[in-house]
Image (cartoon, rainbow, N blue to C red):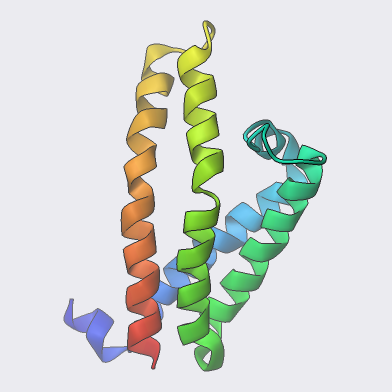
Length: 131
């Protein structure tokens, strides 16, 4: 814990940046899985949302990686994690309704939902420590 405090939250910021950068790249390299979890209630084509969220993730990752914009990046990351939560819910609903999905995948999908909470709180901590 002392390491995190002495580096002004640099390590957690870079960890979040790496997570978001990797996910953002995947939105462009392998968009189909992301298309499938875009909530159907949203207007327009799912691919547009996939690309837009990929751009957002890459932008937030960049903001987190740069010390000058890290505080803003932390706040933006928290907002992004909230914004993509409906897609995570959609994925879980689809998994639970699927006759093909193995039980372990269904359980994993449900257990994944609460993981947004530590991501959001970590992003807010990064923002506070960067100030």
